[in-house]
Image (cartoon, rainbow, N blue to C red; front, side, top):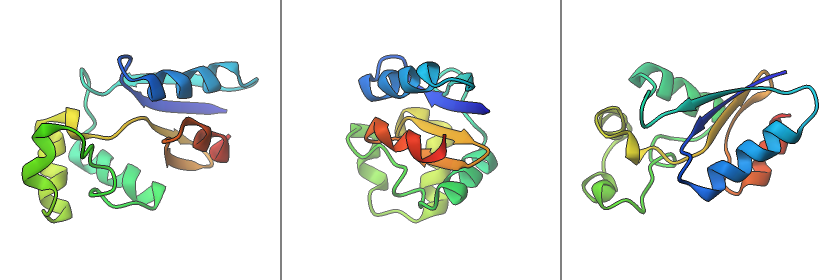
Amino acid sequence: MKATIYHNPRCSTSRKTLAILEETPGVEVEIVEYLRDPPSRERLAELYTKAGITPRQGLRAKEDAAAPYRGADDDTILDAMVREPILIERPLVETEKGVRLCRPQEVVREIL
């Protein structure tokens, strides 16, 4: 099974999720460091749809840069995430079984 993780190596939750993926037999991991290689607006919208969450739920609200977007509509939030990928909450993981925002990291097991 292939698993794609939208990863920030500086994030402990993202590192723990990656460790679960790497320790799971039969999982081939693709790592996308989204701060260096951000997903397109369309791809991000697709990931959130597959995860069953809204862009607002995928907003990293802890970031100071998120303050202007906390009450914004989904389109505005997606546009902001494309401009400033630090606003994307992490880690997002996609497998053939679906997509999850893995907070806490154990959520990844739902799609393995």
